Image: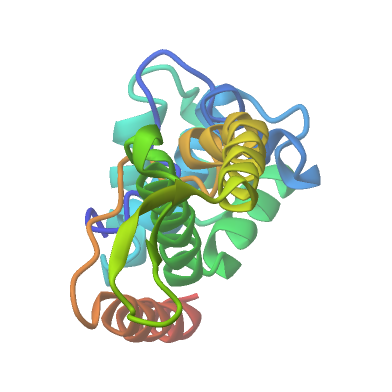
Length: 204
């Protein structure tokens, strides 16, 4: 699951602080930081572990570590989690990770397109060649101010859109890294993820 990089916990930070989207999800409201990390490790990071008790123990070791109480540990090992944690686990399991990868990639492509749009020599904007109507001989150049005006308006809209777009790229979709697009990656991720969801449904 490393290749997805979805909602990866940041050391000493609550998941809802690292990923503001989670703060809007009822399942994570008032959920302790360690509880959220346990749900993430169980539902995502160790989701491919076939033996359920081992999967639970791995999630505990990487979230609660030595802080979990003995009576709670016994309940967890039996698969008896508090309701709020169950809700968080279910939300993570229902999450469409490949769609999030695609959405983040789309936003990054939009940003790249914006940069290409404004990365021009302003002196070249609106410059058009002028020809003699009869001989078609080139007479020189002139400035098309309608094109200049259109360019100025476009750059203004880009400038207006950038703050929200950057915010979405940095904090949206639960993905902590820039997505590296490769041919077929979205389809492959979707196939892998749906297959893992089917396996998890069988195990649970």
